[in-house]
Figure 1 (cartoon, rainbow, N blue to C red):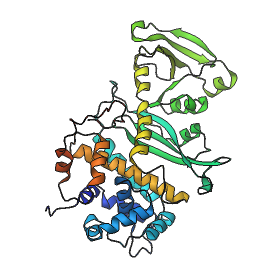
Figure 2 (cartoon, one colour; figure 1 turned 90 degrees about the vertical axis):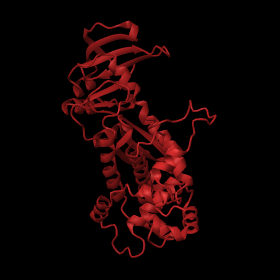
Figure 3 (cartoon, rainbow, N blue to C red; figure 1 turned 60 degrees about the horizontal axis):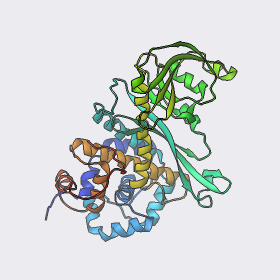
Figure 4 (tube, rainbow, N blue to C red; figure 1 turned 45 degrees about the horizontal axis):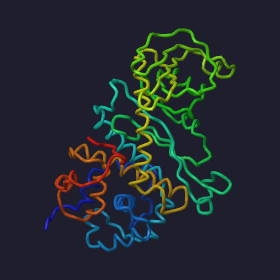
Length: 389
């Protein structure tokens, strides 16, 4: 038998403990915590994410089954569902949000040179939101509609590596466009937005911050064409114009000129019209960039499929945000592990292997490399394939 670390312990070694304890100390998280620290809480919740546990009782049962191995897995405290529920209820969720940002910064450095399909030197982001439905009777603080509750995850994805570099969690009533106010805009970066984010006052903030946006134009937008540029219609382009807005309010909110690009998708024959404040890149680059916005949709589908963010272990706002942020930590942690160990697998495959081997004692790189899944007769054409290489 391998006398080394368990698989779960090896995964958790990628957590920077010095930074973790700084995050805990920042919010006094371990105040009066004698037998169940914030690190124990994080490990238990991370275990639940990696192994797809359904409830607090499910977590408790699984961990008690391997009670003799918990110490070597890093869980030193006395684990019970009441203790974990209490910790999720009262310990500040911001500790785990700060930890997630530490991991995100490391992941972005690792994936900084990755190609995302467009020849662009600038940083490129996609911004969107997803709604997680909740029961109004259990989550009254997250009222969405008359008989429904929900929370929204407003997420900014770095297209190099599909790393979530900004997440803002609100109740379901908050309009998507208001989340733009929370962004710290990076000069020279490109931001892909869908039509739901068209607010010309907010878009003008991008221009004033020397950042670039790419979005879809609304059909009823009134504008005046100032000039047209030559285009190559064989690429699908139909027009490349410099315009100004005509409607009174939009023209006051965005007094500068905009670039309007009309494009027909050669595969679907669908006409798309893009707006941007960048006048330097070739026109064909903007449909290519906007196509990459789909990565944020894939991210939402992926985390809902592989992580526990649709069913919650607690009903308070603090417990919900704690679970979501720890899920993000696990996602980014495994992305770091994949890159550092040079694992040639999709992130989904890695998580599936980790889910059934948490207490095996085998070197992680060997465990993740030895399975040959290439001969399995599985139709993967519709599967979510983040981190393919």
